Length: 387
Ligand code: NAD
Ligand code: MG
Image 1 (cartoon, rainbow, N blue to C red):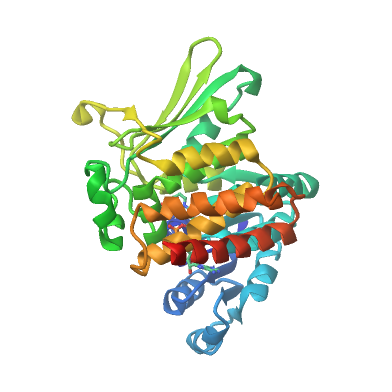
Image 2 (image 1 turned 180 degrees about the horizontal axis):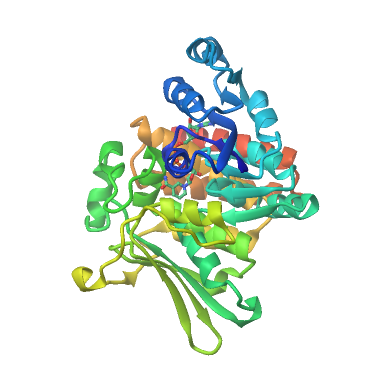
């Protein structure tokens, strides 16, 4: 029996993970399930999966969660500290699927056990890649990528020598606005941005797909996780979302990973690794698809991609600033306070200000990451007010 914890259990990735686990109840023992405001779903799943502990990040929701789980035998806790404590409880496999930089510290706590961390929370690699990887090394923990592109790269690299890798290309669907004329983007609403042509995901990552900030984060994620320089990483627009990533080798061969867009593939691969077991995902029919198309991901139309390249090259704490400013700019866009293109303008402004002051060159500690995260959010508010 494998013991598992799911951080961010009530979200899109968390629910897909639960879907897989619930199909084999005898194979898993659930340790911790964590969530945010949706305590109803959290309580239902904790009861159904007989979790040892359920934690909501919201201290004010403790009483409601406790009431819903009364008599179930599931331990209940609330608040960010309780979440970190639950994440640090021994489990063979932990899914890190909290959204945003809030996932960093629980992820680090899980790594402390020296077991396996299935990493969907790309923000932790963007904010603190070197820290996360060195902590994992020290603890003897293994990190398995769950982002579909990174799972695809990981699979293409099995048995390969990194020295033979010439280039890594990740694909982008292009998001909700891929066929919009650029002039129209200033009128785009959050509701329009939150519809995805191919993938069913949480609201925030769906809007990040439309702005290509999600792809920008994934370029940085590729750089951090696989240790490849920015000059050897790129993104292409692939509207069908069938090819997830391609690895080109020095002998001219390219290994691509194809699959129907369903996150249960990447989650299941990480859950079963190193085995490859059957998964309940739709099968590909290339004849039915007939064609796969690709086009250039124009870095002028998509400033997020250009900024990601700057972040990869600058290193240090620039990823934490990029992510913090992006998360805040996204809040402001969702609240209807800034336009869609203003998000990238704000992130650029915050990066410029913090790098000009030399503050992004400091040593990477969890305190420094937290400090830059907070400051970049404040600076994003200031930049929005100046506009
Ligand atoms: P989501 O918004 O659907 O779910 C987020 C989860 O985190 C929920 O359980 C929520 O309650 C919890 N949460 C939110 N704020 C929190 C906080 N401050 N503290 C603790 N918990 C909090 O998000 P999602 O789409 O499932 O994405 C989760 C992560 O996986 C993100 O990092 C995202 O980039 C990544 N990812 C998602 C997909 C996808 O298909 N949805 C694909 C690739 C990567
Ligand atoms: Mg992805």
